[in-house]
Length: 322
Length: 284
Image 1 (cartoon, each protein chain N blue to C red):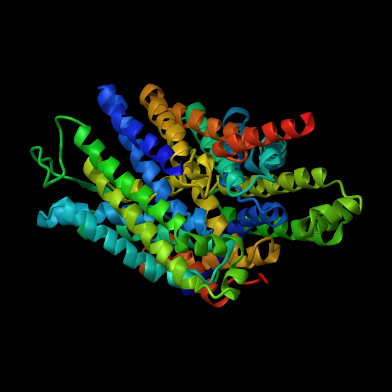
Image 2 (cartoon, rainbow over the protein chains, first blue to last red):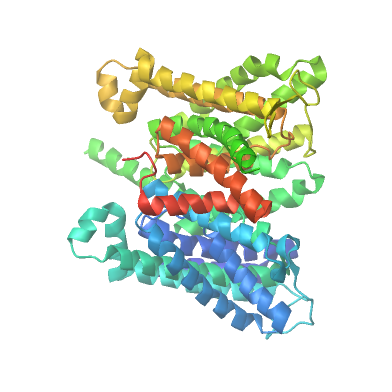
């Protein structure tokens, strides 16, 4: 039953770009898949394990920069760069998070934010990777090996789709296995989890490494899709917060949450930008911000909370009727 | 030279402190991360700028007006947004304040364009004090002294007055404070007003030194998070000392390693200190 709904959603997403051949719509779908996947991977460390990360842009940027720099400097295929990026991100996550895991709650969240900002500043002043100017990826003819497709967006869509399925599968597998229970135990009570014999640091570390590796995969894809990266774009607080926002909006700690949240937030931001962004006056972001506030105020339990509440209301009604 | 750098660090650090004190009040009381904090400061800077440009008000005349406006905005933010999300699970309150920050920042950009603007003349501009080898800009000195005085006032208010004690009680336990007859609703609104006054004053004091533009509060907001956590959540004097420490780090690091690394160093200091004091310098 559980799986059937998941397969249904996946199938529906797969059909969409072929049913509607509009290029703008396909672009929105690709962004949706990228951010839904990022939300899934962020959910592993924050939703399941309860360790709030405000710094996932660090891993996203590492993924984007690894594949881009290897391609730009040494003509290495972005596919290999993508895998290398994921490995780098996992290593950085392990090195950086290990000391941070001693911190609890907001102290940890601010630490992740600090790490991302430090990495951003380092890339801004690192001349080898073009510093603040950023890197434009050289345009090559369409090629699978170089991950560049200019005639159609469908190949990008399919890659994003596959990565999204990977992220979703990993999240579902973690949630339904021993590790998911361990992580949720850590989230609910760190001390109790430790008392039960869970090696909390080790499992938090695993969760962080898996989460950041997947995040890096999407970073590489994003770089190949946009064909230009700079430190402010891929390491910025905006990216970190977008991942947080859409997952919280959809429903945190739930594998459907990021899908629902990205399904609302990404079309909203992409279409307001397409229709209103050209003025350069920030109307699109203004509306986007205002809508976030409205949703947060009127549906403080996330969109998925809405369904839970309506179910409960029904139950209460039945009880009083009986 | 070294003394000069130290002095610069302390001067800017005291203004950071005031911004952080405003943030830590709300954070300690309601456990809410207010992402729109820095944007309120930007609003106060614009207020000073427009009063100066249109009515030729000196920034120091505008101070009560700007602080009053941000206090009012703080109350409005509480009444219309925070109140609805304060008991929401997870990070929903953070989502709301982040949306608010985006809204305020882009509203400013929409209304006033992203251009840098400057408050040209004030009674202090260009004046400086020479003390042996040290050069102290009067606007910077007044900004620092004003910030310290304001922090002191806030701390005294929280520690000494009855209302301040009610704020402390509400921070410890909302339910018990309510049972003791504290109107916690009013306490929350008041805290947001106080937080608004802090950024309002800080914004006014900085408007003569830094350019005014829609993003001018962003970096202060971000640094304020780090400072609050570095000092220990909800701890006013913790935020004060942490602010000075960050100011010093920035000034020394900027001089010896290059200005591009000064913010990275401020964040690094946070990570290092937290290795030894996982709950901040003065947290427990």
